[in-house]
Length: 466
Image (cartoon, rainbow, N blue to C red; front, side, top):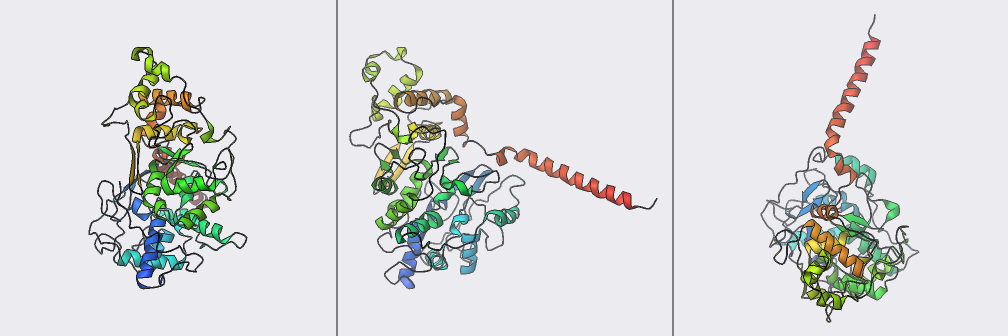
């Protein structure tokens, strides 16, 4: 997994509204750098700006799989050769909040500057101090992002920003408590929860009236985290939400995997308890969003299987394919009853958001990619069963069969997985409309240009004297 930032959670509290809530001399010197370190942790900068498998912290090279192609993160160490060592504070602020590099090129919104735009000047100042004074410079140039035309024309993002980038800095809402205001700043401006949990429109901009209502995220789904009791997390207690952010594990409800596991491993687990509780307080009071297709809460489905004796006593060739795969690949850890291990390391499969969700994306992704997170020094691991697996390489149909067995036994039996669903997950998830029509964009532009030229020719021809 990606290298971690130092634990600075005990040093400071986040500032917002231009007023420092920090201590230890947070306005200058070591205190300022410490506050910047904490802000960088809360913003989870290290996760995207560090290449996997031993990459140097903040040196870039992490390939972010977007629907339009792979976007590589940049080197944000203070190296003058490969990083941001030559950036002034104003240029740093423009990159973080406006998505514009020092050379004037626009950043793709895979870098969540649309959320960071809410950051205060004081926090930008602290971040700049941290990155320029405390981060180890790495003289390596990150791989260049090469998206297909027309998405490689970064100037087009100028127009996108004109439409969708709100540069309004965060201002506390006097109608909310200080805790909720702090949670709003942490969740939206820094942790950019909306970037993953809010669905996007055809041009890949967040849909404002569906804030935190759940969205596809490549092979995974970032679920609805509004306080709706059916579609969201309305049945979760404040303590359960706090535990999830701190550890990634709430028995009988959910376990973090994929991008959320990364966020907990590299960011949330290091935040002050007061800040985590502030985030919880904010999320619990946002407008609830109900999806009419949802019948009951995701963690309310299923029960322990009563087929334990059948599984143990039946000859393998008498079992259905999915049951046979489950007995061979899953039951040793999750138990034939689906109750998981007694110490909770391997979670139960019933009353689990992965098996009770309306779509099976996260169940499929967990089977293919596994689970890997380290929290408080405890490594939680489940191997993936995709190509190259050291445990068992499952085909698309294999994954579909074992998923359907798990759903029927422990989750929502009305959800069905096909081999095509698994193949789509392997390929990075469903492609949005903008990505699906990319091959038609250039011909459409040529046709539009031809029409414009034809119209101009007709106008000129009509004005010529007879």
